[in-house]
Length: 54
Figure 1: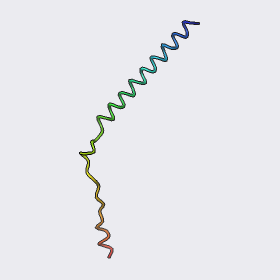
Figure 2: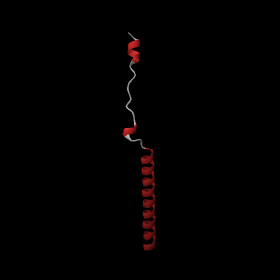
Figure 3: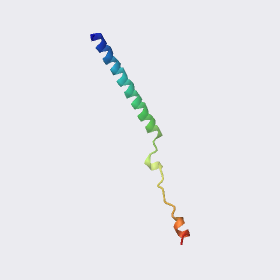
């Protein structure tokens, strides 16, 4: 029975390590795809339609 518990905890540790590695891969991917704020442009609303309605 003791061997079963050690196998189970080993499996739990392996799963936790896999989850941690997957989390790190996702974070690295998100960081690689991130666009810095300095590189974005501010949206300016197009209000020409208001002039056309008068």
